Length: 246
Image (spheres, rainbow, N blue to C red):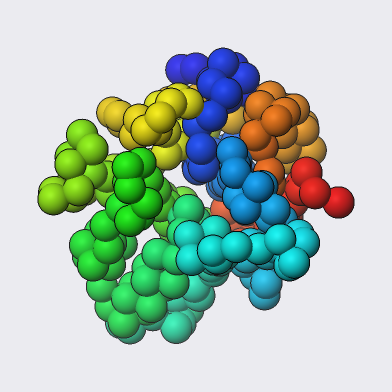
């Protein structure tokens, strides 16, 4: 198991990242999502709350150029009573790095699985990087928690083939999380993440977790951070948002 904070501290440009896991005391389901940017357009963003989720927004609307891949809703919450064939005993928290959040929300609501929903999407059309689409869904119901993660990426930079990987964690171990991000490291073109989501340690305290993750992200490239701790028994949650632009 690695330190999440050392992982980001030692990587100047992991791009966008999702971490999901369980608190060491076993009571909280945890997720974090951060965005970074190298261009002025990418850096001109903030996270704002939208219902039970969040969306990205231009910090200075006058400087917004192409919104297609940078303005989206990274987080949606889907109560089970709104899902076809499900009862109202819990909810899904969907976290992604693009507008596939909407795809997962809409198609799982209609009865598709997380994996089936993402089979309708592929990596981003931003040649030559072909940025992977990374996604996660957290299932909290009846005092239990499990989650899935996904990455859709080009075949070693070949846009003719989309490689799709889904990882499922049925009984997450207390204190453990999984971390996935878009890029292995900085570069031109940017090399896509490879392998399984990294096993990382989690923390009990949301303030400590948020502060340490934000402080260890590269100071020049970090843009925004979202963290949520969900009480597995009650479903109640606490959210922290940090924006570089203020």
